[in-house]
Amino acid sequence: MLIYRLKRRVPERDSLSLNFDIIRHPASDDAFIYSYLGKGYAPEDSLELKFAAYEGREKLVNIRNENHFRIAAKTYISFINEEGVYLMQGSDTLKELFTDRAAYIDTEITLEDYFKLVQKG
Image 1 (cartoon, helix red, strand yellow):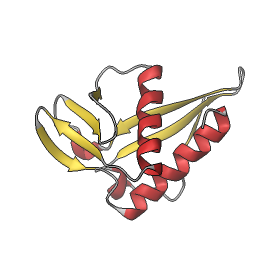
Image 2 (tube, rainbow, N blue to C red; image 1 turned 135 degrees about the vertical axis):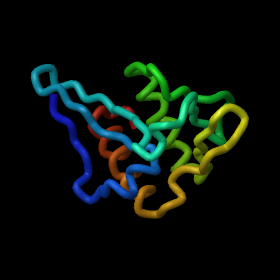
Image 3 (cartoon, rainbow, N blue to C red; image 1 turned 90 degrees about the horizontal axis):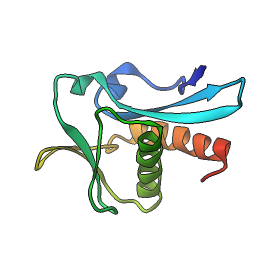
């Protein structure tokens, strides 16, 4: 398995963001997206994502390939439609994600590359 991350990403910015890595299995030529919160949210419990354009929430615990893909797709469509992505804990909004321009660009590049790679974007 090969894991692709942007070289321009920095730990300080990643620690307080939702991050994505592209994972590629060279033998089968499959590519997957992996979504995870930065280390700054490690002590938090029961975190979920809320997308302004979608009903319901996406859990961030015990998620599978399909969930990673759905989170990536909703995030990418939110970027295209210029709609917010929020980190929630219960009914509390902890943070609007991707307000930092550099984190937004890093994520946009990764998601665009992934969807081009799998030809689903």
